[in-house]
Length: 70
Image 1 (tube, rainbow, N blue to C red):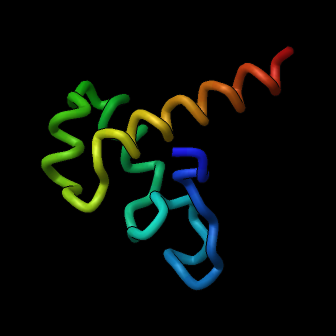
Image 2: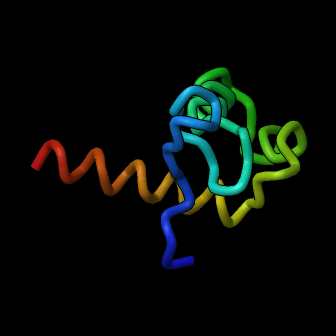
């Protein structure tokens, strides 16, 4: 996927960063992982998010974090 998987649209979830084409906030993924749940559990609860989308979101977040601290 060359297109960003996380989008911000003022018309969707009040502008929260969400997975493209869904109403699933990125924060939900972080909350699940932080709570000790697996990526598979997150994907079961949010079937509109594919595994590829979730992995790309984590990669984008990692790149953004590393860029901000370097």
